[in-house]
Image (tube, rainbow, N blue to C red; front, side):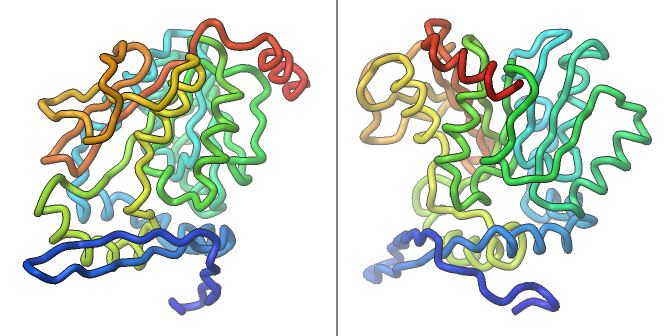
Length: 286
């Protein structure tokens, strides 16, 4: 138990990883926390997010990079899921312009308090913030782009949230995921024990899930393809086991940075999205 935080982290999902060091194979476990625990943790650290960017060696240019990968145009409608204190808002607001709309949703009241203060200082009148579970959020209109900015790994129900977000996206719209991960090879195995300890005491991000595979599989499913494929950028190759089909860059792609410790991946919803899904969007917005 940390301070006054809720002590029951709760076994919702459990992930296991293995780090091979020499002849020893060490199993490491991750137990997802209850959402109330996650919200309270983020309430406590809302004022420290800038410090954590420094602590985790977060490349500062990646926020602008992720916003650019949304391919948002002036007047566009975009959503950030897990918007936190609004550190991505400058880039999102610049992308859609004053005629556009930026929606932000977060579970933490403390984080949104900081985000509202930022919006007031910057006089962004086109930013609308909502406190709720991302799985329950319904935007008032179909979206041109959705960003998970350092939030996907913190959601124990991330797959359900991703599919829900996909339904809110207009045909031709794009989902972008910006996050950290273990580096490739031996360095990643060495970093795993400390990374687990650090995440459990700070951001509560599960290091074992692979959001890029989740998004790639969803894009492939929407295009009527079996399996998934990854188009890698920045000199890195697709993971072993991914499809041999050469993907189109406008379907799904991934860029990695700082020796594979950070990435931006994005997937585009096909323009031939089912009519029933479009009707569902309109009904939800009413």
